[in-house]
Length: 116
Image (cartoon, one colour):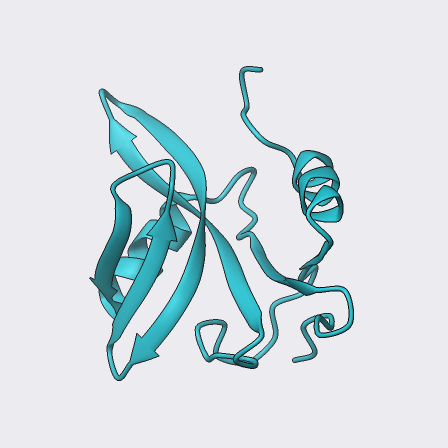
């Protein structure tokens, strides 16, 4: 598939694992990198430019300590640490048709939609 995973693909994969995936359709005036709960992970679509093209992939935000974030990046380098500035730039580089992608992932009973 040329454009990679879609929202529908992620939903099917999460359902098969007994997880709930929610996607934010509006990003208000809240910090998207602020942890919601210790049982809900934030998922972002980030991008990196290689050979003049943007390669997009999904990452999970595992931990935040001040200005440093630990991410699970299975399509990239695995477990990585980034500063807020680096993460914000990668997130903005992952836009598709001008839209940032932000979601939450958790167990069925624990996960709730993002409420700004």
